Length: 214
Ligand SMILES: N[C@@H](CCC(=O)N[C@@H](CS)C(=O)NCC(=O)O)C(=O)O
Image (cartoon, rainbow, N blue to C red):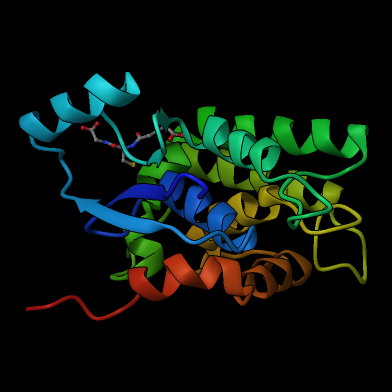
């Protein structure tokens, strides 16, 4: 019997990196268990995760003896362990498109810090940020929109010839603006909103937007 998959996520449902991994698991239609830990992660739990996965953060994917952190490392692992055509694709088949998808996902993880601070994911899923973007965040928002416009092809709802996990990451980055009512061109807003309806994304999003217990 195949080793079970467990995703360690967080109780607040605000982590874009958990969102990425959950979308990947859902897209592959793999059965998995969820283990929720609070943020900040209590020291004891962090030590337990570190002992198995090297890094005491979520998401963690446990697959048998392998415990892995870093959202992109996890989705690449899932793509290679459960490959097409037996399982739906996460990364484009075309090498150029795949490289572009990785470029974009690396950028979204290492850049846009001012924008991420001004428009945290909590403002996407719950109470809006309510404050104007600062200068630095506005410059980063414009860069994000320009990148999206460059990549979008009229009449297509995904960046590349087929859906890829980069669509999920980009949609979440754009929703930081769309959900807060920041000005975004129609084509970019429509792209993000179309992605938002995809069932693999909804698995996380429905939990993130569910009313929290009092
Ligand atoms: N680069 C990591 C980022 C993971 C990360 O920062 N996780 C945060 C939640 S969003 C976390 O576990 N924070 C707990 C802590 O640092 O104690 C990834 O892509 O998975």
